[in-house]
Image: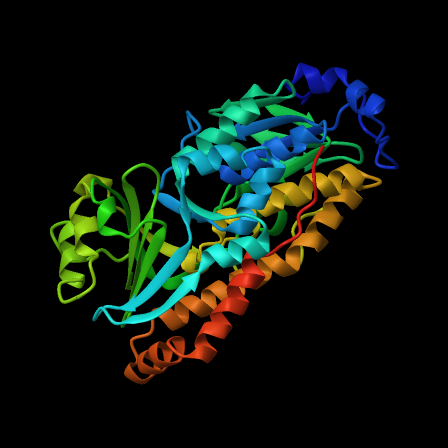
Length: 418
């Protein structure tokens, strides 16, 4: 069946042998990139590829580009990625800078205060918390403003077919679109991933998370400070998230797909934190019940191979991680920048995609493994393990371990894009 895209049909296929990287060639015959998924990772990849002169089409299966979620942390590495995409200032204007993270026990006793302002100076960029919808909107508007990119909704990709000189995305309505490369940025349940590697179920972490955005109570949290709380079998956090808003989360150990036997989520949350002596209750009470989200926490085991030929994966589609280090969106943004740079310097599409995989694999897989390990530690209910965790965390040694971990996460070198 011939591709439905007139643009790709009329364009001579790009040979695998070599790519002419001259500006004149890029203008005359730009790389045609297909991206499946209109979330943060997919839009970031589109913007990054657009900045190196590629022509990009993003296919989103939903009727509109809309992020379901609450807040997210963008640590320094993610802000550096947004700088490469030209969106750092816009993100800063819509988010809230994080300069300190105060960790406390549910009793109110402070375990540690992490200096993220100092870490930001070392990394070369601040850390912020921003609403997921705001970040996605910024990315969508930047992609849509480009003359060489298009976002198409209501396009559900069900697989792909690859030839020597092109790759074709196949959609649920029978249509096909041809390009030089295909990027699966379609999340933890990625269709492109399934087409590459077969069905592989995500890995349940043993707990679920409630999330919400509270309004009108930002004064309960010191300016530019975030709060994390540790309790047996649970962790919580609160972050300033834009004007007079606070993003919060709370976890609870449970079996996969379980539902608390309570009237509603607010009741379950307030019952769980009923004896806490740290001020967290006010954030829950300031959130509408129907605005509280609850999701099982899952990830994907690290993989050595990310793609094949002209097809690769990005973000949660390849390295979905638990939220225990706040790195999901950060790693997707890093992926986007490195992917575009690798494509721009690759002798062929295939070698560019392999270079992207090789440059990103170790760091992304480390985040997946370390985040899962951290989740197991933070969610423990064993009294001895809880005592050791809290005792070590409040010592000089514990702070040094934490500093090294966050320095490794936040400090990264990312290439400049055109």
